[in-house]
Image 1 (cartoon, one colour):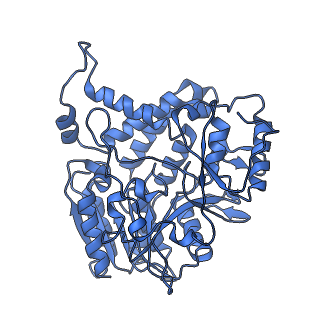
Image 2 (cartoon, one colour):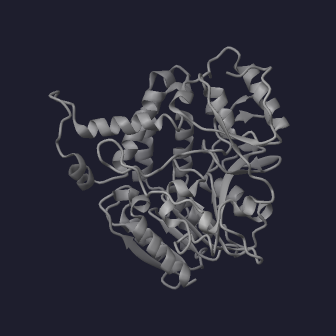
Image 3 (cartoon, rainbow, N blue to C red):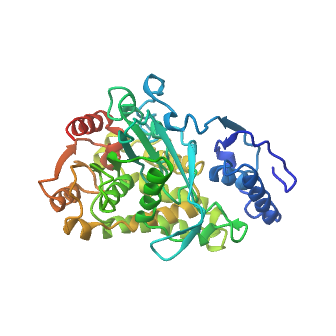
Length: 446
C-alpha cells in the first residue's frame, strides 16, 4: 500500500519485481489522484531512478511487493556484465503441456535514458520526458564502435539474457569479450519505458487509453538518440532482431543516412505488416475489446480479454505439426472439452496476466501494425551488409516475406538464410543454436 505520506529511501534505484498478485489493481481506488501525486513526488526526489515499471507496480498492487536494489552507477554503466561474468541462461523452460516457453523471467531491470522535454511522434502526438529502459553487456572499446544492438519482440524486454541467453557470452554470437551489446526496450512497453501505465506529467494521472499512438520509427528514433547522445557511441557494427525486433532492425537501416549502422540482421519479419498480420493483431484486440470490463471503461481490468488475446498469439506463433506432436487429441479428463491443448492455452493466457496489461498490449500491437519500410527498401535506402533470416515453418511471417526483403535490398548487399524448425515463428527464439551460428558467421565477415 502507498499513501501520499509514504516516504521511500532513494539512495539506490529500486526495481520492483512483478508478481501475479501485483496485477490486482488499485486503478479504481478513490485516492488514485493522491497516489499519482505521491509517485510523481517520489520520482522527482529519486532523480528519475524510480522506474516506470515500479510506478506501474505500485499503482496496481493490492499486496506488498518486495523491492530489490540495483546498484548501477555512472562508472559501471558501460560494463553492466562482461566477459566471464555474463550469466548463462537455459534457452527455454518447459511450460505446462510440454511446449517450451520462449521467454525466461521477465523484469524491468536495466538503466534508463530520458529524453528531456517534448518528444514528437510520427502520428502527430507527443510525449513529455519519455523514458527508455536499456541494458548493456560487455565493454565499449576506445573507438566506441564495437557495438551490437539487439532489438526485442512484441512482449520482450531489455534483458537479453532472459530470452536469447544461449547467444550471450564469450565465443558466442553476442561475444561479450569482443562486443559491447546494447538491448533497449520498445517505447510504449511495460518493461521500464514510458507506457500507458506511466504518469502523464501534464495531468498527474496515468495515460491509460489516452496514451498517444507510437510508430516503430518513433521507437527506433529514441533508441538512436540514446545510443548517440547518451552512450556516446560512434558507430554500430550490427543491429539484430527477430519478429517485432526485426521490424526495428529494418527501421534502423532506413534511418541510417549518416552510416551510423554498418550492418543488419532482420529475422522473421517482412518489409511491411501485411493484411494477414494486421488481421491476426486485430483478432487479439477484438478479444480485449469484447471483455465486459473494457466495454465498461475499465480498460486495465480487461484481464479475460487479454488472456484470450495471448492464446490467439500462441497459436499463430507455432505450427499445426508442432501442436499435433505435443498434444494430439489427448484429454486431461473424461469431459468432452478437456483437451490438453486447451489446458496449455489457458495456462499461457493466465501466465501472461502476471506480466502485461490490456492497454499496453493493444497499443504495442498497433505500433507493430505501423511497420512499413517497403517503399524505402525499393528506393535503395539500405546499402549495408544484410543477413535476412527466415523460419521455414513460420505461418505468421511466411518465408516468402523474408525472400522479398532480400530481393528488395538486392544481392549486392544482402543474403538469405533459413532456420529449420517445427516451432513456427517462435523458431527465432527456440532454435538458438542455429541462430547463434548464422549470426556468428555473418559478423565474422563484416
